[in-house]
Amino acid sequence: MEVGVKVLAENIITREVRYVNRCFFTLIAVEDHRQPVEHPIS
Image (cartoon, rainbow, N blue to C red; front, side, top):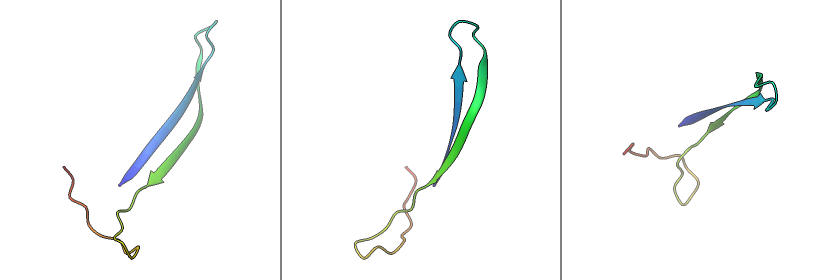
């Protein structure tokens, strides 16, 4: 699964919003021996 995060900053006086950062997280299900396994999406 990959999750994206977009970070915005807002000036509370002028209400100006600007884009400041982004990142992506990749999550992998692993078994007890740290081998990747399929995980059903519920």
